[in-house]
Length: 205
Image 1 (cartoon, rainbow, N blue to C red):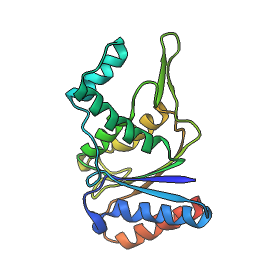
Image 2: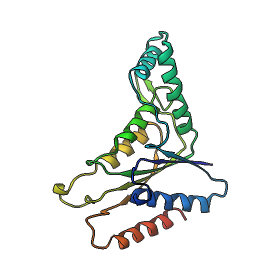
Image 3: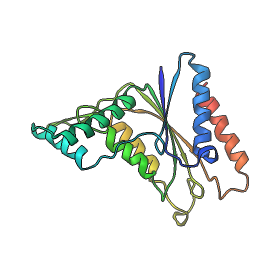
Image 4: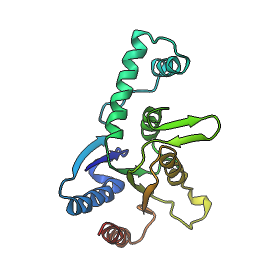
């Protein structure tokens, strides 16, 4: 069984979303002795841009035309990332809330791996169908100020519903949402953290 840990934080050991994601992974390792962990640090690993050449290659596939050499090279890199993504049985995402939403680098990964015939299918009569079935995802979302129930003056969370919608779009319907918040506007963050870790221990028993 393979876990793909997708780290979209820049903060390293200071990242609270990463800390909680590591707790999830530790519990999964304790439960599954055969677990293989693939660490994908989006800010440090090689993540190709979905640029002019990648779009050109994609459109060439749609229209049945030939790609040029630069487009073929770009598409090869896109496919390598997709294959890495699709090979996982379980996804663990750690996501800091940036401006009420996901970091741009995570959106880049989403645009790279969300391709027709790979992660989703389309039928003119029935619409879209997710193709990455039978997988599970853990979404760890951290925010410094916003938390559920607080006034909109303190922000919003567009990341969680967006990521849930995207995962279902590609066929991943078994999703666990884990929130760690607020990490800054909190008079007893250690208590909050312990409660979240306790919830994880119950979730992955």
